Image 1 (cartoon, rainbow, N blue to C red):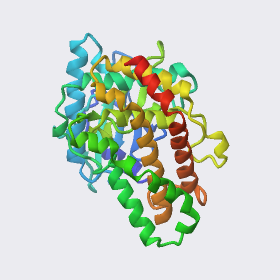
Image 2 (image 1 turned 120 degrees about the horizontal axis):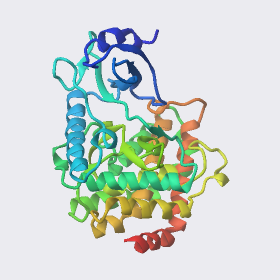
Image 3 (image 1 turned 135 degrees about the vertical axis):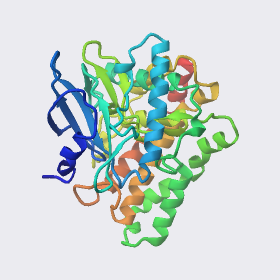
Length: 369
């Protein structure tokens, strides 16, 4: 029995399910939190399901702050969805408090658990197999920005400090290069030089934020396709999930992380860089959908900086992989030697592709602004 499973009886007894629990099994493909789907059987209707999660103590040191963010954002989303005539039970998550009324349940050894209703009639996709699917995710993340435009972003906690602080990521890389505790820097000379040639780029978005050109917004900060629930009947992206990294941030980062993840057709650790290429067509598809979803709520500067969001999120991710490789693969899980270095190289290949297609990317943005 896994460690999380050993607490299930205790935890299941702490939440008001409203019907007898008939089963709880591991669910999904996440690697951070322990996630279970709980089945209950009401007397007068079909089985009702819930998502139960033990939050990772390693990733999230302050569950009070984490859940304060999530409850604040989901309750705000619910009100906005109802105001626009939507279905808040399907279009946003809802935190179900344990019987003691707290935001989450603390087990006998201090583990933090939370509960959501299961959003029925949806699917979670791991890759954008069609342009339409990629567009659906873009429209959903743009809509997320629109719904939260009035939320006071500065009131949110930083659940992971400096998460998308590219200047800080650069500083950490330089520190890892200086320490070179495993003697790996000689084989990474080209990658280190690649970053240093773009050191000034690491300040572009943050400088625009400091100067007031880009506004601080509520951002998701992990806008992969699998963090959108798709309606089984219509194919539309209807509910944004995995809200652990909802923090104050830049809208261009949410846009950019989606491009980094979805506008190419290679594996993240592809060793043949000839197979790693930016798909400009998918950039076009996503840009149009994201701006449609945002519904005119982004500023002119935010729209203008969208290509920078794509480049900086990809560069930052490559820097993180490179830093972890130099430090001994202590953060990102690896299945083979040099995997993090290969991951770094794929990201830098995408950055180079973005630079080569920069004029096309800016023209696409202009076309839809």
